[in-house]
Amino acid sequence: MRFLSLAGRRLAAALPALVIILAGLFLLLQLAPGDTVDALVAQMGGGDASMIEALRRHYALDQSTSVRLGDYLWRLIHLDLGHSAIYGKPVAEVIVDRLPATLLLMGSALALAFAAGMGLGIIAARRVNRWPDTLISTLGLIFYATPSFWFGLMGIFVFAIYLGWLPAGGFGSIGSGLTGFARVLDIAYYLILPTLTLALIFLATYLRIMRASMLEVATLDFVRTARAKGLSDNTVVVRHILRNALLPMVTLIGLQAGTMLGGSVVVESVFSLPGLGRLAYESVMQRDLNTLLGVVFVSALLVITINFIVDLLYARLDPRISSGH
Amino acid sequence: MEFLHRYKRNPAAVFGLVLLLAILVLAATAGLLYPQNPLGLAGRPLQWPLSNPDFLFGTDHVGRDIGAQIFHGARVSLFIGLIATVIAIIIGIVVGALSGYYGGLLDDMLMRVTEAFQILPSFLLLLVLVAVFGSELQTVIVAIGVVSWPAAARLTRAEFLSLRNREFVQAGRTLGLGDFSLIFREILPNALPPVIVYASVIMAVAILLESALAFLNLSDPNVPSWGNLIGGGRGVLRVQWYVSAIPGIAILLTVLAVSLVGQGLNDALNPRLKNR
Image (cartoon, rainbow over all chains, first blue to last red; front, side, top):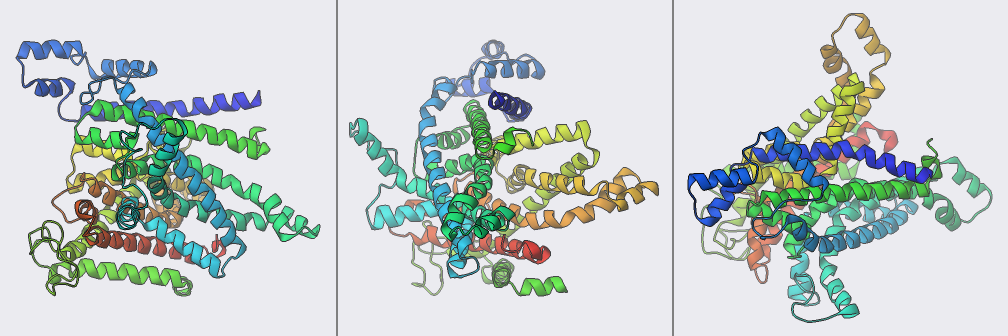
């Protein structure tokens, strides 16, 4: 029950920010030169004034900005994201088509960054200020400073062109007609390089936080108690330090969800993956603002959802949080 | 003085500073070494580095000198990073200071706006801003600043919350100082150090954001940019991989230098927090 009330409170807290985002974006797009009708008329190759007038009435563009804003928010509540001019179908449909690739990429990159960051962070913390720590921390700094698109391109050169081990891009072999498990493997094979690329930058942050958090927890009293009981070093680390040191790592998932989505725009473009990020890029290039707005809206929802899950996870890991202390 | 001494004892920080100075030298000598337009045609395209003494770094896919673009690109990257960071820090300080000092309803409203910016993936917001306002250099710089301020605002707010009821502030209030001078002349100088240190993170991210934007061909095409060169080299990656590789290393070293200096400053300012 407490769980549910926490969940409800969290969602309610995210609502004002979501409304600000939507209203802000809507007003922002009012500043963009041209509206939907201009785009349509340009596509048709021109039209007479009375028809343009009729079209404006049809899309309710003759109303005042505040009326249209209300109308727009009301449509979003029904998850009606409007019509995409370049894809010729509802924006919601285009986005649903593109969502799986992005979720798959983000999920696998997150898992890799979290696991590898945790492992390397533990090693670095246990050998603090000795060579394994220096090596890992230096690598972390370099990874952090690497532009992901450049790492992706270099990965393509080494693994796809020079060694020929991995595909250079795409989301599964085209026209292979694979089904079931073979198709899963095929897609996984295509996702190796993109996942590595996206995970790399986040790996650096995770490993830094893990190292810092391990060192911090290791100075606390209960760790000294555990040591005084005569527990071995490994037992202290695994059973006492690790669980507590994981809390900041979990927080980081929520904090980085947005950055990860932003990063997938670039990574999807490098590896030509049919995902949400690439859709955002295409809609910018083609001035399809309706689609762009839809992508941003769905991304914001995604970030809120991830943060929500992180909160639940957090309460699970640390019972003190849900009891309100 | 003691601060300088602590900074000097940290080899990583010193390395970062040397690296940053080297990049500043690149930026400063760009006009001397490569007086011609770095985006103008210089010679036969796709000459390998070191194969022609005129083009030490080789030429790219259209025949522009890669060296000239690296040197002039250093200027552009540092300039964009610096100005965008200043914009982000100013917005962050104003929002955070007002929010932390006044509290109450204003704090609630400003924090909801900050949350809104934090929920939106900053690169996506950047795409929207560029799509709406165009991709001239000034627009891109302002846009990068506008998407980068929330963390600075939260940091400033936290500092203000802990400082606003200290004795020196109460003393100032008793003396009849107005809110404006209490905020900007009494509290802000004390709240500034962690925000300044954080500026290095914002600058590193700003440089990366600009390079990603340029890589996608969404930044100003009329200024030499490392990201743009990497994007251009994509088409010839199969054989002439150096066209993309060289500017990538330049970005990497610049961001590394900025991060190392920031971390060094942080360690020197808070010696007790070192190793964290």
